[in-house]
Length: 277
Ligand SMILES: NC(=O)c1ccc[n+]([C@@H]2O[C@H](COP(=O)([O-])OP(=O)(O)OC[C@H]3O[C@@H](n4cnc5c(N)ncnc54)[C@H](OP(=O)(O)O)[C@@H]3O)[C@@H](O)[C@H]2O)c1
Image (cartoon, rainbow, N blue to C red; front, side):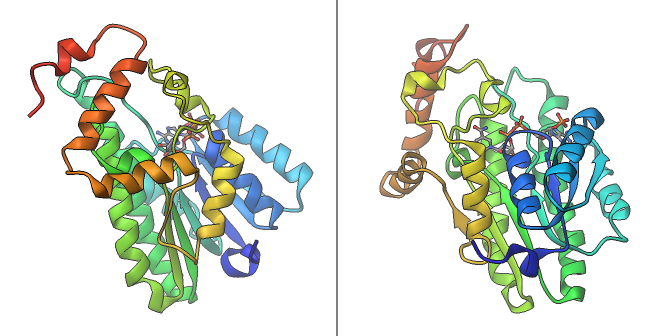
């Protein structure tokens, strides 16, 4: 792996650092000698991460307990890190709402947009300015394979992840002249608590499960090399094959697959039998 510390040190911010892919990002960075600003809501989990990483690696960890689904949280994070020489921002925290969009709670859907879209956008805006001043930097976004098409039952989540892909692709080009690297990683089914948060048994679809450590390694390795990266052959293939189909097909196909893997009340016949067009 390239010398992350020289390129993106001495400090990196990781949102959603206390679990899953964010924890794996934090550990990779610590292994590379980069100090980590670990952000999540639960302070106890952050403190556990801090003592684990500071005892294992020769780095400092600063913990910031913040709910990034609140509208002023990104600005607050900018303020709380203004004294640190941050060279890398990892916009990783995300939330997934499952269910029929029409029946989901509107407040929950707005929280999703604030956490998955507004906060990464605001943080990127704040740090791009700082990176321009310091002459280099990097931004890594965690999107999802779901961001490459509309996904029934995960409509708002998939749309939020599409935003990140489009934003990152554009920033990758815009910021190259300033030596600021931008990459978006779009994992598939990954072994973290989030993967079990919806009543879907993904194993029924035989999707291979990815490990967060590998996803994080692939993301950091792609930074500075690629605008977009999709880990895992199956997810890579599913994203690629979309290009060969009419845009209306992948959402319909996903509705059928999710209907098959769903544990619980709705059925494909009830919800999709008369509504495909
Ligand atoms: N797992 C998958 O299959 C999969 C697939 C594709 C993409 N992804 C994406 O990967 C990213 C990481 O997810 P994960 O799978 O690693 O999930 P995870 O293990 O559940 O971790 C989520 C992290 O985000 C933090 N977080 C959640 N809500 C937050 C909020 N409102 N403000 C601040 N921090 C918050 C959590 O800590 P607190 O609860 O303490 O806040 C935790 O540290 C997400 O963007 C997700 O969309 C995951």
